[in-house]
Amino acid sequence: ITGRVTAATDGAPLVAVNITVKETNVGTVSDVDGTFSINASSGNTLIFSYIGYRTTEIALGNENTLNVTLEEDAQSLQEVVVTALG
Image (cartoon, rainbow, N blue to C red):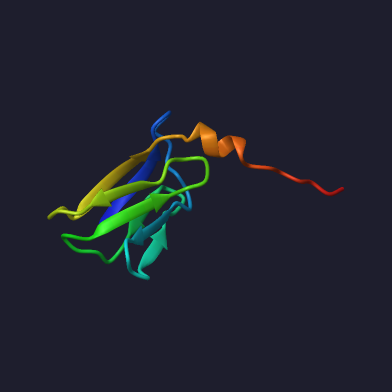
């Protein structure tokens, strides 16, 4: 399966989205263009996770290409704490 991951707000590609096949150790990350390639087959479920965005699960059918749009998760953004040491 190949595809592309973008943000729902502006359609920008998302870099380093974690993509895993549910209940397996198979996984990958999206590249600088938001594209990915993963070994999965019909009946598998792909899990897309990215900081600040809702985790999305997609059950696969017979498609070879999958374009995914992730929605922002304002709740998780409120939980992020940044510490800087000078």
